Amino acid sequence: MRTRNLALSSVAACTALLGVVGTAAAADSSSTPAPSASAKHGAGDGSRALCKRAPKIDKRLTKALHRLQGNAGVRGSVARLEKRVAKAKAAGHNEVETFLSHKLTHRKSLIPTLQQRQKDLAKVASWCRTQHNTASS
Image (cartoon, rainbow, N blue to C red):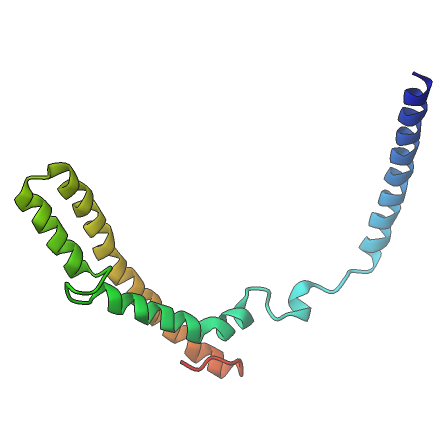
């Protein structure tokens, strides 16, 4: 019991001391502002990193669009999934057909989204070239 009381009083004393020191440090730091992160690393919006990654992102978008727009022999293509939906419907597998049709709807919605991202990324890459950052697509 005595050890526990001693430990509790020690913790209380440390907390009080840290509270005073923390207040003094906060008051001291308000008089001289620290340099902001944006001053050290650009605007702080991640533009440097995005400019650096733009070529790889463009390759990924192109690859995904190529796959989605491929023929029925390409895994992951809309055409292949349409073929699977038709087969499920012909076989009378209503639940499978419903599942695959929802999947098909989602996959079809990806195409315009990825195309828009590709257009936006092209604008970002041209902006990066004007800012003397590296982005060669």
